[in-house]
Image 1 (cartoon, rainbow, N blue to C red):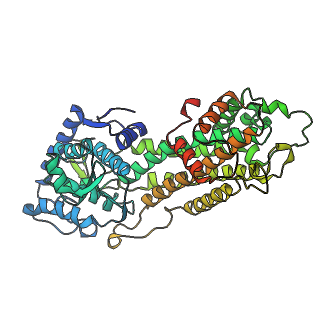
Image 2 (image 1 turned 180 degrees about the vertical axis):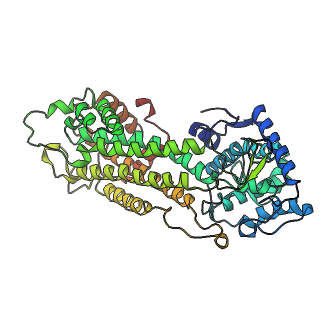
Image 3 (image 1 turned 90 degrees about the horizontal axis):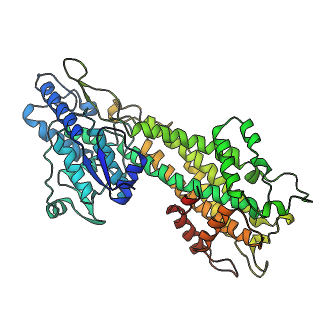
Length: 507
């Protein structure tokens, strides 16, 4: 992870967002960005003095845009905007999410199209670098005119109002800013609007979700490959030419990954002869097509996010391509370009989890005498229940994920007296995607728990060399099942292993 992230106008990366959000990397503004911000401010000040109405500069907001505001009230206009729009409810967003919002907001403003002052961006960075995080309620954004309510709560902290987390402890903002010698910003024209017009909540959630998805996918491939040997299944479906025939890049990639993990397995050749089974269940045999399809879907999300992390999502924008700069009202704040991918992400995750749960069911069912597995992997079936109930937990997680896959974007509710008449609801898509990833992580942890136990049933035979390393990592956290014990701590230990990216070195 990076120790310092430099805002120079170029797109942020997911790694940079994670470095700042989770690892407190410092953020600095480049000289070139300072120049761009300052030039944009000069252009805005020349425009606002022309005597004409300009949205958000000397007019009201939303359906109040036709109401002109006197020049001596322009500062109060921006403060009133922040206060009136801080209407969020519910539990606060995680600190990591708000830190990511602050970074992405600063990056957007630093690209020199928003007409704000350098001092405003520097104030945001001062809070970030001091580990001071605004308290932002999780509910209230419809994801269209920017993430208005959440960003307004963020902006309250910049003007010394509301509450913040100071190194994790919730306190009044004014008290914390004084302790850190940070001066609250006095908003100038358009600056309040620039702070809250943007897709920064959606983009922050998408960034952290994709970082977590990478960890989940690595664990899912380990679990799926381990289950193949755990069930004494065939590897014929991973044939390179078969995968190529399907013409999907993700399928070939998935098949190659699974093949690599099963390389040098002693279990696979042990049952090649005289095995009466002709084909394995879909959850084993169709891993490459299903995981490959998920990889393709996630790549679409990643590509969309990469564009969003380089975007300016404010409105109106200061455009100075011609001789005279213009303040152009448009719709770059609309969340649909990132909201649709977030809806898509939850669906992709559902299939990673759903197929994992089916493999867990198969391993525990005792249906297949050729697998060499006892029912529920119990040491003394009947007297002991083994891992019977972990599949129930996986099933419960999958059921919730199914509900989370109902998309947020198609159901429109109009706002602002009909001026804002088509909203994205991307923040809800983001929240559901992140919850789906959390649940899927537990489902895969359960499969790892079962598959590692199934491998023990085939000792002294070994699975592939990389899978043996994964197995050893699992055993460093979870002991072999010798007798019945509560599985909940074991599931949690493996969930932590996934969160900590404990299998990264195997890829």
